[in-house]
Image (tube, rainbow, N blue to C red; front, side):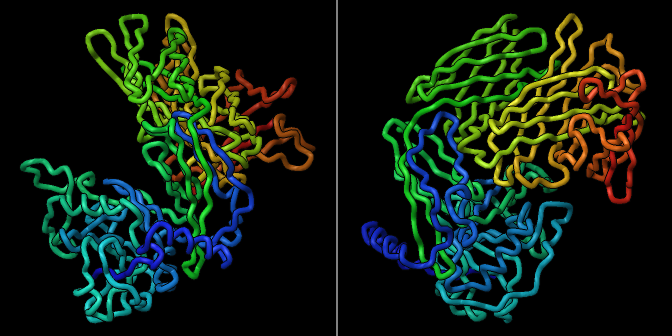
Length: 592
């Protein structure tokens, strides 16, 4: 059950020769042709994410690389479609279906292989459902760093979902048994460090397919395996692109789907050249290069969770390391400033009122800021501040949109629900208007963070009502930035702590407790004003999808004394839910 592959010929020769061959390949059909030059780029602290779909013709794109994220690090596979096309397509089918998410590395043989793709994290490690076996395509040797399909003994054409990474030159063994093991990929660059690290873990014999199960963080005397002890794949995503930096100490370049993320390092002042590599179905490669340098500024936002209210922090930092920011703890808003000094970017401690100190540390390998709040008595809480999106570069296709959502208390017996409207601008700014389940209206402003490969942005939202008995609504929500989102385009949960004097829905108390938030993007039907909901029959309808597990809280009506006002002069008598619990679909109606 192992692998076989030989490195492509252009990877085994001198850099000068590589360059010549790559230039020659430009005359051949390529995977994704460049249609808009990337040009020079300035990269601030916190990095820059470029969506390559904006610059390449994706109509001819061929997925030639798979980015694998694991609980012990990340690596990228280069697919060898030219010598194993059926095996590559079989592998990609599992990748694109999400079958490898949470897949366990269930076999480790140091100096030989590490294997995965057969079982997932869960009780008794359930097997991954398999597709029909793929025909054997042994054409490359099982050298170190190659990736091959596992199969049944005595059956060359039995490979399905399981695959392994060769930790050594296994050609003598694996090339000459069971028809040869099909090598369909190779691990790129320094990615073998992940496989080598897995091979150093202690192994345990749990019987069956788990006689060589690698486990991490096992405590002395521990008698049962916890899910956290398993080594697993957290995500596998296919892409036509691979990124290389000429000077990783200046700028690192990593792929996230079809996006390349650039992060400045300690030598950022020297600049670097980034190469984007693509391949066609025949294995021919081409490259596009562009220079990067340090420049620009970036905003970071996030919460520091405490024993009482969540503290919201926002700061803007320039490429020189100087920053200004705002700290909000519910009782007051405080402004601060400071500077991270190059090249070490050492942590900065900022004294606040009340014997509190805010310590900020720039994490150069993540492009994030660690924020720690130390109070009197040396009690400390910390969190990560993440970068706000740069709209033009990181979200080139973002369009203005309106998303409506329900705010539903996660409390049995609660009958009140809230409602909110999120107005997203092309700049990435968001305006929020809504009403809480206790009838209190609220408004807030927020900004999209850099979206992930699925075009989902995490948005921190904070609303504070100050006073002797302050209230707070705070949390991070997920908002789709895709031009064509799913029916549920916003979700998340918010922590809601009310003033002791606040009017509350039955069964809620003061809190803090959780409001679940779900919603859909709103497109105005013909003859309907999107914000007033007025049509010929003066009825506005919006269909929302909800997880079945949350269907129990879709009940109740808006209190008659708190009629929602969606626009001047347009009041509605009730907020009504009609729920089909069998399929988890609810309909929200606002009637005048």
